[in-house]
Length: 495
Image (cartoon, rainbow, N blue to C red; front, side):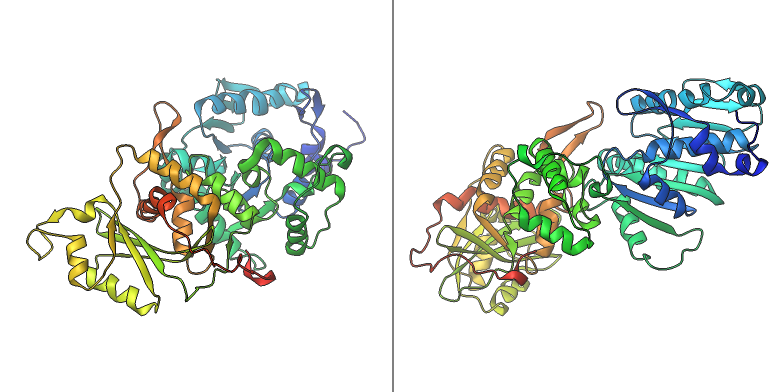
């Protein structure tokens, strides 16, 4: 070590991070750690409670874990914990990040801070400071806590996510440091809620117990560039929108890298390499049924302003939920375009409420498509042995058709996925329904650690099931021929 170093250097944790620790880089070379530009910005903006939404491979996990190791080596009686999303990652994080860096500290430091306990998941040093890695962190008070890939934990292990929210995070001392980092994984769950809560405080001062939001998009990394000559450039409108939203010009080399990378990642691109924070959550989790379809609809700008065409009838597609929730999509077929004008859903309402809602729209209606159970006789509705279809007819709703039952619901989902290539949705009128569709996902098999090929039944099911009635019927719908051409959206109509 340089004998000319001052005591102040040694007291500075940022200096120590840049001079004492060794890591393996992306080429698997052993190199001295130096914070990159994004990491330096993060260190300058550090807060007590930090929520980090990021693109892949920016090195934040490495930075945070080195910060924890450094705090334990140079301070006594510290407790630091890292929560990983799987047991395999517990081993990898401890072995390749924490233990690797500790074993390469200068001999003099390791002689002063020798291990009292050195397992495969915890390093307890002679100054009674420890850093441990696990899938849970409930016991004892922590001065430092890092929750790695919290979005994935929320999507695949909701029970574990609740335990982190109710047990691990409250275990962090009031003057301690919390780091919750992840790529996005759909627009629901504790990580999404935490991000949204923190984003509302952007531009304000933060109390220690409030979360501070940090976002690091792909375009900040200098290395994310490639030669434009080798790429067929596309989506100039997309890049123009990104530049407008961020105020940052994107070079041709960066655009080429993005296009080439997206060819590989496809619908995962926005999640793994988001351009904006909003875009990160546009990408549904990997178990979502319609994730590819939503990516295509946004790319083709088919979530937009969809006008009502008074000369054509409006069809409705219903789901009569077992949990007393009824969902309805309002649809017009205009030439080859299936246009959805609005979505409506309500819980605990009688059928006359929905009939009144239909009449209040002022639409001219065509057919009303009910699921197969719309023909079943119901004994507890106040009408002895009357089906929903019959009750709606009593309320003067005409042209009701029952969509036949299918033996395998996944067949209907796949029919709907194929049909969505022709669909346009009004961004405002269908907002709630689109949110449900994007979150409609497969069931996660915790034992097999994989997605089941069967839908998860939750609050998003009714909207998805009502649209599935359209997916199963759309090939038999008859289009009017004098439809007058496609929608003229205009610049303000597309989102």
